[in-house]
Amino acid sequence: MSQSGKWTGGEWLNDLFEQELSRRGAEHQLRKRIPLTTIDSVHVEIDGRRYVNFASNDYLGLSHHPAVIRAVQEALAKYGAGSGASALVSGFTEAHRSAEEAIARWKGSEAAVLLPSGYQAAHAIVQTIAATDELHQGGVRFLLDKLCHASLVDAVRGSGRVFRVFPHNNLEKLERLLGDALEGQLQIVVTESIFSMDGEAADLEGIGKLKQRYPFLLVLDEAHGSGVYGRDGAGYAAEKGFADLADVSLVTLSKAAGVAGGAVCGTRIFCDGVVNWGRAYVYSTAIPAAVASAIEAAIGVMKAEPQRQERVRELARRVREELKSGGQKISEGDSPIIPVILGSEKRAMEAANSLREKQILAIAIRPPTVARETSRLRITLSCDHSDEEIDRLIKALRGI
Image (cartoon, rainbow, N blue to C red; front, side):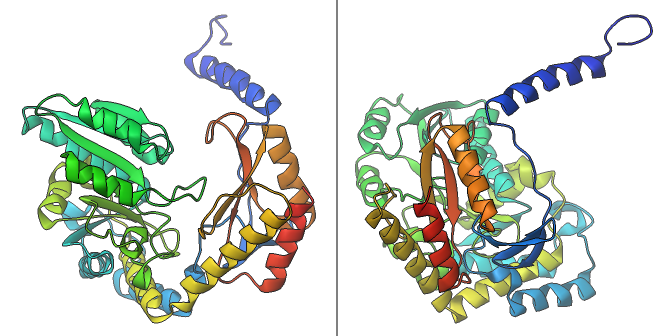
């Protein structure tokens, strides 16, 4: 309180947040960062103690691959540490152009636009589509799978456009929504190929059948499918034979690619639209050229070393089978994302702490990131995990 006896704006805000943070703490929902030192792709050090990292999305271990590191070092020497401006001013270098062309070839699209993060790529896609309101008299409506990533949900909500949410992978509900569309209204279906918190796959075959009967655009988030699935890691849609199903796709380069950034993939016309209407792109400083060069190198490694993809999927199948044989309910598939559902926030926190005592790092995922009573450990695997480390993980999870 100020000397006048009145609350100042800053004090009011702090008091409000303090109450809410205290409530979150009491309900085991308080988020905290963990300062750590990265040792390599699957090991970290926390407070002087070494842990096996089962919390990273570095599925192929490319963050520490010599070819990727070398590309960064060479580009740093050539371009410097930062890009200095947005891509539309002076931040778009030859390295960015080359990386975008490499991404487009990798994903089998006409073009790609590189952004600083997957979150921004999601916003740029939605902003570009939303801009058609000015050009398309019937307007647009977004139809989102309930488990879509927060970046997509935030982007659609922020656009101010009409949207509906359908139950996860419930194509019967999606079909009813498509059938109820207003005449002339453009329908945009938004889903992930591999869902980030559950590791489940979208029913691309079912969506493809719907597309034969109803006119809609498909926005497919391949953040967790790219690198792990498809020839050269081209993605889950490519592996299932639906590479041409998505009208626009999103890929993040911070997961299997092991670097940073996100990209919009689509037709050349749509990508030109992103450059003009995607505010998240237009008004953001471009990623450093060194990062763009690292992305291109990572794509090269995926093509040259397919055994990395094979290894991580083999480990994913093994962990699932072992946990199921021990009586635990585990999602199907071979995604490196394996959720161990524990229910309450308290149980998830206790389980994470139990693993920490065994020098295993796995993060408790709690509301509001996931629905109430579905708090979990989100286990993520890398091709660089050793068989002995996988054995340790399985033994520890069986004990929970």
